[in-house]
Image (tube, rainbow, N blue to C red):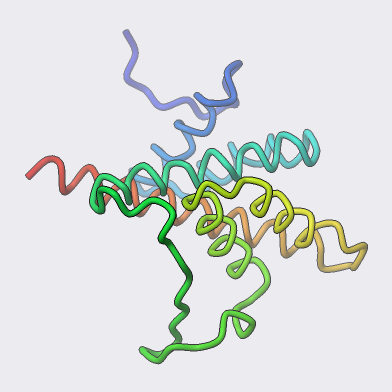
Length: 154
């Protein structure tokens, strides 16, 4: 049995996402991000599904540390240690945060609407905003999973 982390997309999309997160956890963020690029190339349905999988990883890790909190998650944004309005966040980061909060609160239709609002405006920044949102979701999944593993290992 091989313990190498795949560097090419796997036949099973779930394995590709897990490999991407594993790369991030091992400090190889660029390799992980490149693996996720496959989903973006395949169109909106695989992309939003990948976003949901990343948000689900955040959900699982968070719920392990906060049992019984499902349905109570919100968004509080900070900049320079001071709370800010979420509208002050970049579109990609705001999307990742709101998408994850909606997913964690069992509101998939809201999450999907946020995805559509981010990348289907017909504006030139749609692709950049989507890429920034995926990067932020990826970073959240990697960090949440690392924290969960660290906590369960102690």
